[in-house]
Image (cartoon, rainbow, N blue to C red; front, side, top):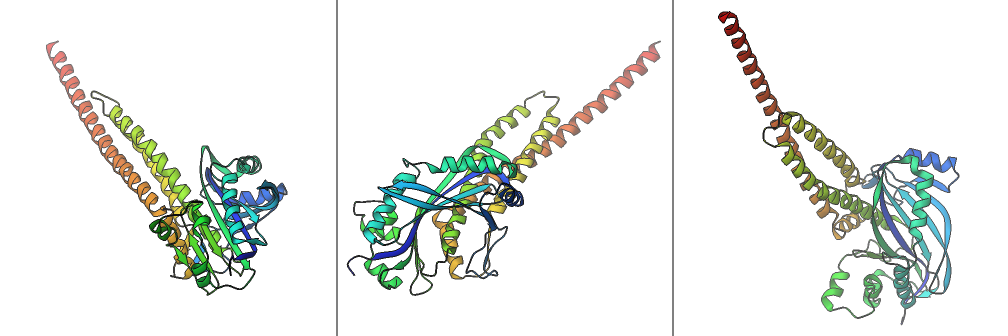
Length: 373
């Protein structure tokens, strides 16, 4: 076979936004019915056994009318779906059909698509979609974010080749590097090896290859579980990135507030320490609640195929690294508010001792005055 020919497939452009502190998923479902905005269902993985891999809180999947987008001289009708996660992330997926196309053409189209709707793309359908979602579903967004954090991923899915082919034949004869790297120039052998390192197959005729920002999936059974898992891992990365940067900004402010609270001769030190400690405790509680929701969005209990793909995706996207960074900064804040509470108690004790001594001095003064008269 000189060139693999794709009979049926698609390229999924995924864009995720952290838009709120949390999202009321029941309210999303109610607003979908009230405003007749497409159809919504609670997401679930299609083929994974519930005992091995399942959503802790199933997100709401909203199917919207398709968008018409022109790319590379083609006018395409692209199915549009949105998934709402309860920890405040919205994932928007645009599916570009790629039927009856040679592999070389598919790879070129994927790169053209990335240039069009990617992070620096000249087309920007995402802002309009996001604005529409905000107008429609704002009552379900608790404490909307003023600054947007986002992630993106490009997933190429092949469902059927013109001729039957196995995963082994694909890996031996198909050059996935231009598709996964987005590069037109040949890569060095070490770079190629690293790019193709994360490969998974369960059956003889399926294949998943993942990188930081792209993936290739050959799945003849029309199973979307792997694509859904990649979306979940990106959603987790986005949530941890948001709180990592939030705590980066918070730590210098915390140090400055502690410095001010510890000014010498500050008679209100105990109140300042207590107020600051309560503020930090609230911050820790909120961040911990949301990061735990993000961390536990998928329950993994058995080492099955999809669980391995999921855990590999967490590693590739550095989710565990960013999560550890968040936990480290939370530990610093926890230690700080614990020390502040101790200082507040100590300051109250010193103030009480001062008040007692003052009362004793006043009583002695009164007694001396009475004795003198």
